Length: 235
Ligand SMILES: Nc1ncnc2c1ncn2[C@@H]1O[C@H](COP(=O)(O)OP(=O)(O)O)[C@@H](O)[C@H]1O
Ligand SMILES: [Mg+2]
Image 1: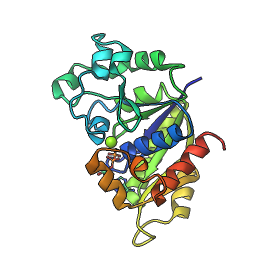
Image 2: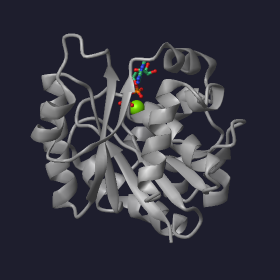
Image 3: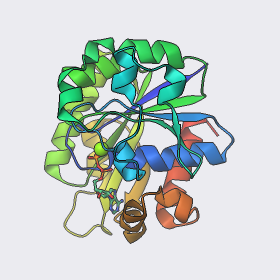
């Protein structure tokens, strides 16, 4: 059975796409079949992180019935399977997120995990994702605006029957001028399962268009993604 997991945050730029890439890599290392799905139609950037700015086929084509599912699943040289969304504004205008459930139906039983990248905010695009996922991972940065947005995102996920698998506290900087883990957990009401520090290796990996986990599997941040993967696998 495939587990569909949404990665959400409320606020933008907190590390959703980064988490998808590295968690996907950590699960893959454990022998799991993983597909990354970019369902962020508004501002898709999964394929940009992977160095494929304009893929030949994308989710928008599948939803318009122009391409089959197999044609829109790409394989990155790191081994990751991913389904990109189109970065074109015209494709965005012609795509109806209400049709998203079709891709979820087709992905059933094709992988152990489908990790779904989602847009910032709490709009109808996100709701259509959450209607199709079983679990949600919430990414939060150690500041108040991220925390408040994450809290609303959690409520929206629960309203759509998602289990909250855990919180990833991302981009911490050794406790300097930032919220503490305990405050984050108390406010959100869920445990932090991974705490990823601000890591130059993550910026370097983005520049090199590969997951940082692939470049440095034993770095401090990769160990946190290992923790998150083990948590999902109940190890
Ligand atoms: N732990 C981290 N350390 C350093 N840079 C990070 C970290 N997490 C994310 N980033 C960087 O922050 C930026 C935003 O991350 P991204 O994953 O694209 O956020 P989102 O998908 O939530 O918009 C990217 O440039 C990414 O490389
Ligand atoms: Mg993103």
